[in-house]
Every structure is written in C-alpha cells, then in structure tokens.
Length: 176
Image (cartoon, rainbow, N blue to C red):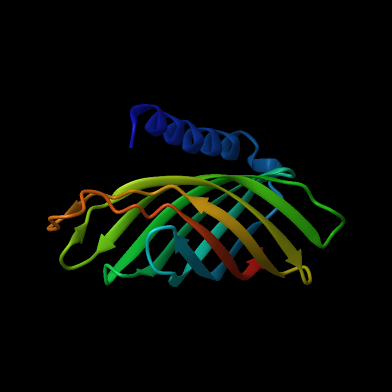
C-alpha cells in the first residue's frame, strides 16, 4: 500500500473517532448484527463468507461501523479474515429507509497453505440500503468494491494476488 493511501486510511479513522467523541450526546443509535458476504475477484473464483458488524451513528447523517468477517478465498484454498472500518454518509428517508454510502479501510489477514498470501491493507467504496422493520430490527444490503493485492510467497509464478473485487453484503441488525 502506498504512503498516500496509508495517510488517507489514518485520516479516515481519526476523523471518525474525533466525530464520535465530539458529538457523543447527539448519537442516534448503536446497532450490532450479522451478515453474509460475496466477493467476485476479477482473476479468481467467487468467494463466500460471513461476519459481524457494529454500527455507531455519530450524528443523523454520519455513521461509523466496524466489521470482522471470514471469507473463503479460492483457488488459494485460503481463509481471509477482514477487519474493516467504514465511514458512512446516510440520508434517512422517513423512519424506515436509510440509504448510505461511504469509504472503508481494512486489514486483511490470511490463513493459507502454499502459496502463502501475506496480510495486507485494503480499501474501497460501498453503497447500501438499510430497511428498519421496527424500533429494534433492521435488514440491510450493500454493494462494494474492494482494492486488495496481497503479496504471495511460495509461488514461482505469482508475486501478488489481485483480489480486487466487486462484493455484496446482506444481513440483519439489532438497534439499541
């Protein structure tokens, strides 16, 4: 990952944390939930997995979420463990619809045999829609793009795995 991208990631996380501290009294809600995930890397097979999400509404139009998930990456026969943070701009439409979009960064851990994928930083935009089914439950769906190119060790033909991919997440959230 290039130096400007690392500075961008650091600035994104710092901004989200600052907004959370400075506007704590105005926070709308906190939600936790689970989701299924699908990735379709350009050069490799489709990958499936799932994860957990913690979302914190900093103010009415800005939210921050943290995610931890597991995705099976083929053909490397590897497990990928993304640890991600996203800063989201959301626009409530009434009391039930919440479209959102934003940018996220993550650290992607890999558990693989030979060839071995190295842990790497990744980033990408996302856009989604949250549908609140009541005061305490919501479902969501989102599309995203992931920029991720981990180094590969133990391969004579690959130096990087081009895991840049389109992805879809869908899940359920419990609001507090």
